[in-house]
Image 1 (spheres, rainbow, N blue to C red):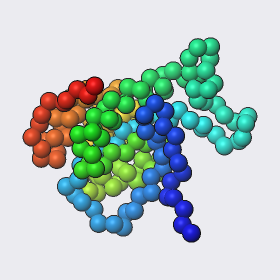
Image 2 (tube, rainbow, N blue to C red):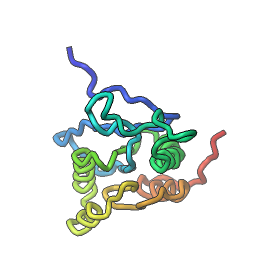
Image 3 (tube, rainbow, N blue to C red):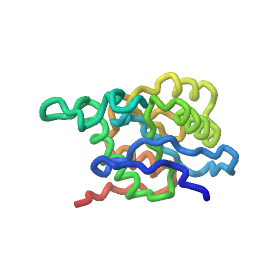
Image 4 (cartoon, helix red, strand yellow):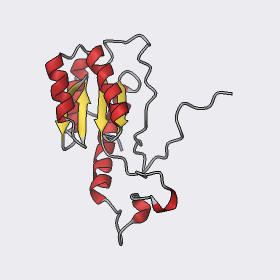
Length: 173
C-alpha cells in the first residue's frame, strides 16, 4: 500500500513549514503558470542525532523568548505575504516555501522555473549567486532579498504576470 508523498507537516501559528517537495520534472510544464518561491530558514530540528542533537526550536526558549528570535521573526513576517498570495490566487500559481539549506529542493525548483519561464543563462546565474537566507523569487528571478517585500507590491507584480486586473488588496479581518 502506497503511503503519503510527504511526512505530515506541523504548522506553527498558521505559517507553512518548509518541506522537501517531490518534483516531477517529466510532467508537462505549463509555461503560463506563475511561480513564487519564498526562501526562509525553518525553525525546526537541524540534526538527526536524537535527544542530544536538537539545536533549535521554540521549546528551547532562552528565558521568555525563543532560542533564535531572528528566525522566528522572519517566519512571522512572511506569514501575511504567504496568506495574501494563497487567498488571492488559490491554486492558480505555484507557491513554494523552501529552506535555503535544502539545496536539492531549492535547486530543482529554480531549474524548473528557469526552464518554464525561459530565464537566460546570465539571469539564472545571477539568481543562483544572490539567493540569501531570506528571499522571494518570482518566475525564476530574484525579486527581494534580506527582507520581505510589501504585500501590495507583490500582488501588483503577480497580477501583471497572471494577466489579472490589478486591484487593491482587501484587508481581511
